[in-house]
Amino acid sequence: MFSRDVSQPLRAVGGLLLMSVDAVRFLFRRPFQAREFLEQSWFVARVALLPTLLVAIPFTVLVSFTLNILLRELGAADLSGAGAAFGAVTQIGPLVTVLIVAGAGATSMCADLGSRTIRDEIDALEVMGVNPVQRLVTPRMLASGLVALLLNSLVCITGILGGYVFSVFIQQVNPGSFAAGITVLTGIPELLISGVKAALFGLIAGLVACYRGLVITGRGAQAVGNAVNETVVFAFMSLFVVNVVVTAIGIQMTPK
Amino acid sequence: MTLRALNPRVFRELERPITTLGQIGEQTTFYGKALAGVPYAVRHYTRDIVRLTAEISMGAGTLAMIGGTLVIVGFLTLATGGTLAVQGYSSLGKIGIEALTGFLAALINVRITAPVVAGVGLAATFGAGVTAQLGAMRSNQEIDALEAMAIRPISFLVSTRIAAGMIAITPLYSIAVILSFLASRFTTVFLLGQSSGLYDHYFSTFLSPTDLLWSFLQAILMALAILFIHTYFGYTATGGPAGVGLATGRAVRASLIAVVSITLLVSLAIYGTSGNFNLSG
Image 1: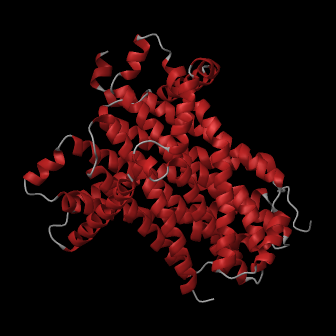
Image 2: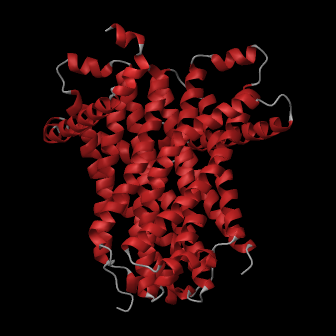
Image 3: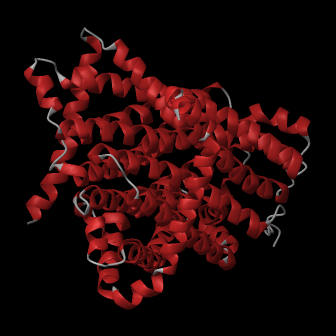
């Protein structure tokens, strides 16, 4: 009983790692599926763009609202620009990107691959001598990484603009000091870390989605639904862990 | 008619506002029916509610193996509590007030991270699970079978889940909040080496019980919204296995937006622009 309970999750982790190694190896092996990559990038961007904005705007307003209260109490309302930019770039940007890329992009990818798997299309590919990892997984992984990177910058910009509008027009912070504060805590290193985080998150979400879609167990609608459900859960979990680790490494590496 | 058949896309675009309005109306009716069915469900399907409560808090299928919703939501808040402490300690340290990390944990965990992260965790675990289940039932025509047997499908499938979710949310959210506090404290005290007395002092000084109660209200509202959205998308899923997968994805997307918006609106409604908060005591 115990060994079965433990071995199955471990086997899943192992399988995911194996497939990831394969997917990375195929990056350097021709032919690279450029067309699939472009189509997938466009697809993920299309499903993720609107939800990203819809999540990013309330989120930034929420954070700058709380931060401004705090800063005003400290008598440092002039620093709200610094707070908004720092929050948007270091945490909100990557986190919102993750949630949307995993919640919107990865779920659709998994549903797509999962329904192909239960229709035996993946087996058919293998019979025809096409490696599904090379043909399907590598371009999807790259596409979700690229889109996450791009969305991250969008969220950062939305975050700073949203913080500006909310702080200046609603909480009466001085606009000049808001603008001056933006660069106080946030510089190139923070921006780079944020980009690295987002790209990593995107890659991981894409890999989890592809893995769960390809190893689907059972047939029918329930199986695909479960696979999508597990994709979301596992993607979120790994992303939150990566976030803690990369944040800690990033802080160590930035000069004080 | 011919004009319509010749230009289907033009007509679809022209009718888009009407279709959207129709969808909103349809969803509202669905939610109304689901809520109205709760008393009936509580009376007639008590055993199902108990079973679903267990399923919601422990998860079904493979997810149950790693501990279900409880462990996953706890894990997510644990991770964010840790991140908050790491980031807060270092940024407060830049202006020389890292002593206030405990205060930051008491404020931000309660007001932002715990509700948002718990909401996200709930949407991903029991929300997506419910959509997958109901979608599969719809595509296997089990829902039609229920109707044929004169069982009210919305009461039996949707209202029971809403009742079960409302029972499960309070203990789930309590655990999530406690874990986020523990993670912040552990990271600050044991990993970053702040003295525990200092941390505890600021933490308990600024932990406000009213804020905590309001944050429970946020969690309950969020759970309700998540359940509504996910049951609706599952109940109306079309298009076979692929359709169920897509419906699950769409539902997760919609409920992420709902989670963040609810947290924001409730915070603005409760705390106002002044923040209902005093650092000086």
